[in-house]
Length: 216
Ligand code: E4P
Image (cartoon, rainbow, N blue to C red; front, side, top):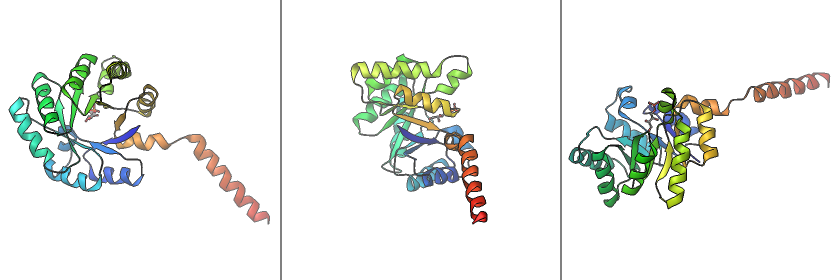
């Protein structure tokens, strides 16, 4: 399973990259708005830190506007993946960008029908937003299960990128279902490594050893 970090914060990206488990980055306009540097500058810096896929989102909602922005974003670095909203105009843009060899990430996916369409259009990644579905008392991971089943029935190449992750169990469930990628906030990555029994066990190992040294 590939691990992406869901942030536009340079320090978080550097820390996650230093852990040695980072495969890529996803950003969106809300995440970019939290930072002070302009979006394009941030993306350039992110691509200099991470060699894997870096998702950058268009702001336009019409086909022509999306295409123009997508070409500009793709020009920033070879590892840029253009994030396109899953609407009718977006579907057309995904198709054209695929024909031009530009990688795409179909974002804001909330139904198996949307996931099926973007795979047919040739999206590189599909992003089901599991947390936002859970937030409205729907089942985010059930959507991921459905997408995995549909894509495997027909052999679509589109990679399933689980997004809007809120906690470590989303990551584990995505792994059990067989999603290709999970993108998560920095805090979730940190939580994944933690276990109280590891901390208690480590403390005991060290104190036992110290006690024995004193006796010698
Ligand atoms: C992913 O590509 C999205 O940027 C992100 O996961 C959205 O997460 P949120 O629902 O926590 O805003």
